[in-house]
Image: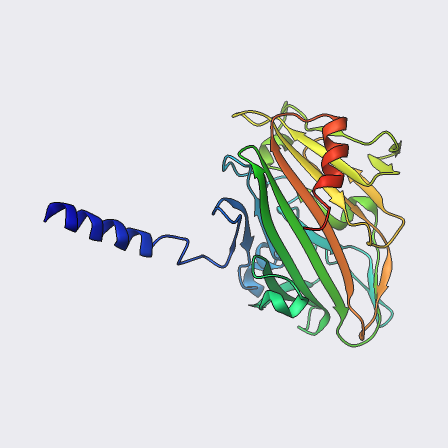
Length: 296
């Protein structure tokens, strides 16, 4: 009788497990490992800067949080985020990086992955980019998928389809305040913190103010307390060119470009992140930049 009750209890626990009650904000691998979480607090005008944009937190293969949320040095830097600080619409300028003038990126709903022709293992969110009066000027579908290459390496595929809501929108900004970027934990921005180290391809060449060109990828090696973690960011091959990168010692890095959005045809962007335990070298990053982006 006791064994029967134990079996019933185990079955009940399995029925209530995350595998059958999946939190839609989590981006999980097929084995249920958390790689990212969607942060989408509704916009509150009374707390505009705290709620003006959505973003994703990123986690290491062993479950450690790698990204900064609100507050800290440069509070507009949050996790994986997307924006341009010199956008143009109807002849006026808008800053969807800092969002200081009432701009917002507002979550509307989750949509089926099939909407973008993707499989069900993708999380897809509909997001409106709105000016101060609430008018959306860009409509976005942001999609993420998690994969794993073993116990010490996970992959995060990121895709964004951007569509001008009404008339042409220009995406533009300087390398430090535009594009799709990753911001590591606040601890790396504290005084006397060990700086984040970067690994770059042989083709990379640097310019003033931490600007880099000639890169298809750059990796950040985060000096985490529980052991180093490498975050390899790979720019999508079909993203607009030229691509300009920016890296900071406190762990904000990514790349940008300038282009126009049209109201009829969405701009399809993609990036791949490979997250690995330990410090990885140039050879590993170069090999992984090919392996991780090969269609499955």
